[in-house]
Amino acid sequence: MTSGAGEANIPLSFMRKISSTVARSGRFARGPAAEVAAFSESVSFDWRLWRHDIAGSMAHAAMLHRAGLLTRTELKSILGGLTAIGREIAAGTFRWRPELEDVHMNIEAELTCRVAAGAKLHTGRSRNDQIALDLRLWLRDETIAVGQDLRTLQKALVALAEANVAVVMPGYTHLQRAQPVFFAHHALAYVEMFDRDHDRLGDSYDRLGVCPLGSGALAGSTLPLDRAFVARQLGFVDGRGRPRLTENSMDAVSDRDFAIEFCAICALIGVHLSRLAEDMILWASAEFGFIRIGDAYTTGSSLMPQKKNPDVAELTRGKSGRVIGNLMSLLTLLKGLPLTYNRDLQEDKERLFDTADTVRACLRVMAGMLSDTTIHAGACRAAAEDPQLLATDLADDLVRQGVPFREAHHLVGAAVAHAEKAGKRLDDLTIEEWRRVSAKFGSKASGVFDLDRAMRRRALPGAPSPREVRRQLARWRRVVGNPELP
Ligand code: ARG
Image 1 (cartoon, rainbow, N blue to C red):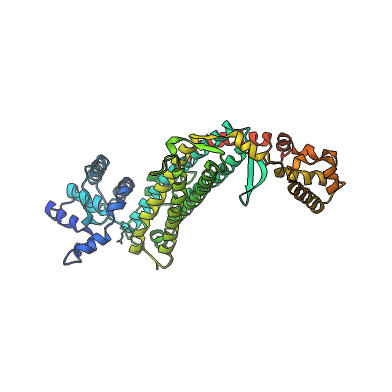
Image 2 (cartoon, protein in one colour):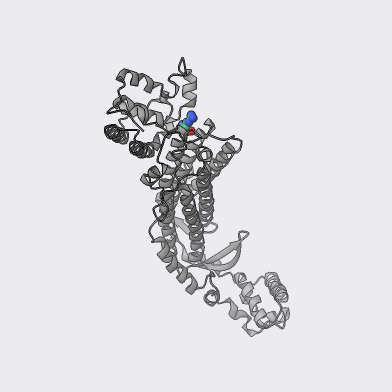
């Protein structure tokens, strides 16, 4: 394969002309209507892919040189030109031109204006495989970043749990007090959820790691491109360093499953964040009074001077709706598309960017809020000392004496009803009263209401005994301190 000797011999004035109309030169007699240009441009948002676009172009150029399609001098001038453009973009001095549609055209056109060999950069490449590549590269970084933000949030939860390791509080079902748990147990429930999200990111990271470049517009290229080389250059390799390539060019340019997966994982993170936010909003209310969120993470009312509102938690709960919506947008965007690339796909970017930005902001601000939250141990304990929370323990005691559980359930229910009628706490019933409900209640009935003992008895794996909670805390301290994805 020959590439001609030295720099491509094309007059600069011609390069300027074609670079301002890149995608239309030749075929079209006139430019797009002004409203079409404004309607179809994407550089106003996809410019943020520039780093990955340049990295992909550099790998592609290096491969073209190996394939004999670029001379060494041409490669050097392309790499130099791209480096300079990258520097200018980073410094904010690069002039983005909406009439050039997207990030790809802007960079390539500017390069071609500066370096004649730029006109060879798009050899064997289409924007269709280029954008598929850019998105995968960008998502690799974002996936790692979301993973790190998840870890930050988990660390904040673990730290709050550790600082309040002895605090007992009611656990709820149906938002009714159910059984006592440790605050740490409740906090670690969220750590578990976010860890599943972290796992999911790891799984999707693996599927992101295949290189689509070389798929061309949809049917590859007739040129002798070295796809494996590009994949290796860009880190698309398996554990043994072997290149990982997309296996079907038509799928490769029209696939956005990886974007949907990312949005789905983020939607689930959003749901988990929203539940955490909801718990904190409830706990911060005067009705619960379990926590105090620090001033830095609450806001005042414009009218009511006494108010301290948990807006950060509320906004997190609200923003999760946006993230779920983004997932729905992407699924809907894809569902009717014939193979292969269709311009509809350009609509994926804003949803994807918004998802990453929103979820990362929520994760970070919630971590900050947790670190600035105080737990009111006394209020939590007072609520947990409601003896009815140990009604199940009492039934369990009857079961230990051989009473069938259904009968035990009934007898304890009757005792609760009796206490309610008598206007007494369950643990204030006299031996005679217990006996009146059933002779099966022994003298030990009231011993069951010792809260600390009750906590020690919840000793199964995954249950909130002090020992088990400490074991879980130690486990999480190790996990969240670990090196990050991948
Ligand atoms: N801006 C386009 C996008 O985001 C890049 C690919 C354009 N491809 C094309 N055939 N018009 O999808």
